[in-house]
Amino acid sequence: MPADGRALPPTGRPARKLARKLLRQRVQKISATRTFARIAPHVIPALDRAVHRLTRGKVLISARMLPGVILTATGARSGRPRRTPLACVPEEGGTWLLVGSNFGRPGHPAWTGNLLKHPEAEINWRRQDISVRARLLTGEERARAWRTALDFWPPYAAYQARVEREIRLFRLSRLEQPGR
Image (cartoon, rainbow, N blue to C red; front, side, top):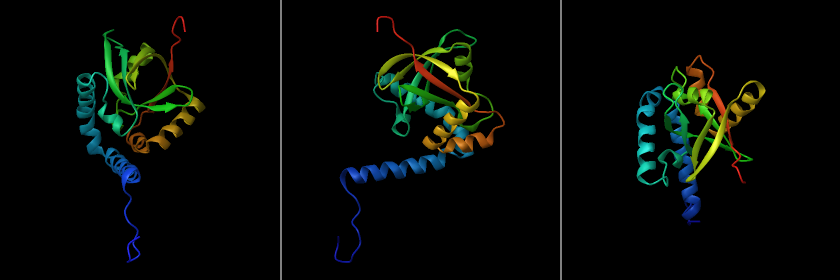
């Protein structure tokens, strides 16, 4: 401690941890705004897809702030594979929650309709491709999952407050692989 009694700022690992915490708080505040909701859907997914492809699955920019997956689901109308970078809430037991917030915009995101029609999908999680089955959550199970999502990323509450629709929540579970 300096002679004047002031504490020294943290250095090394504690400083990086503090910086990440402060950055996360700032991003949470910004991401709850309407301006972010107008701009982010056009920029973040495209940037994530490009960087993920260029780095051969090693980097997902949005995952620097939140855990993320690349969801590959069958298009509800086209029947073609659709790749969507998404934030996720990893759960104990190897499942994931996906929140269909659409950044607090009015309509449900297209990927939620794809999962409703074709619940079997694939995610890329930590550079590993995993076959999954999606299940739309309802009732008390949804309420518990929603609380978990809000604890994980508080701006989801601002997104829900801006829209009349109920934000869809999905739980992804690994599909059993033959021979395992």
